[in-house]
Image (cartoon, rainbow, N blue to C red; front, top):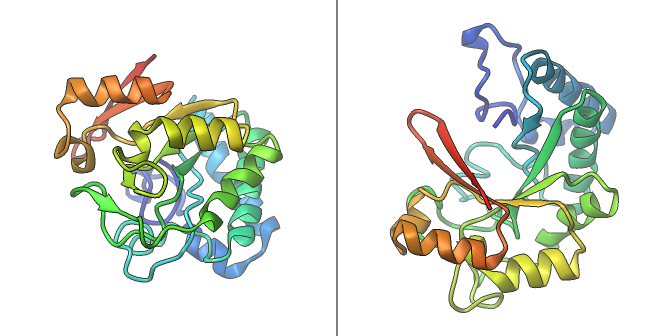
Length: 230
């Protein structure tokens, strides 16, 4: 999770370089600068032997009251094509240094009113098709190594299950409609959007049925992840 800004694990307090948030990079709107800044992040990871960054965030800055995307300055921009441009620069910079990237959070968390760390988040009335565009652009450019799901519920896409556990979302939209052939990674399955609605065994079963390739379980206090690959 070395996105930059507030969301980073290799912190300046530990001796690592300062990083800018996606929002700060988007405000500059200089893709070359984004590339160079992302290359610095990628070099830092590569020097430590880390070959995957759970970034970039490609959620739109679609809701000023969103606590987890807008609130933490994690979106490049409100316009999907601007988000896509900077996400592509970010991904290409990582590729140059041998580090894979993971675009998140599919099919879009930017319009949400709530935080999926804390409970169920329903985006039925706020989500729009525009939120798919950055994912589509990354896939078309061959720059989507992995894609991470969102735990958001959207009754227009699946009236029963949140995106992470939804076959219509992961197979119908991501695989079939957008043509994504890489790995689909869950967001933390221990977030309350999942645990408050499902038991662990049921959630894992639904996730595998939906088409998740990798299920992640991480204690959000210790950042000690446990990964189960299907």
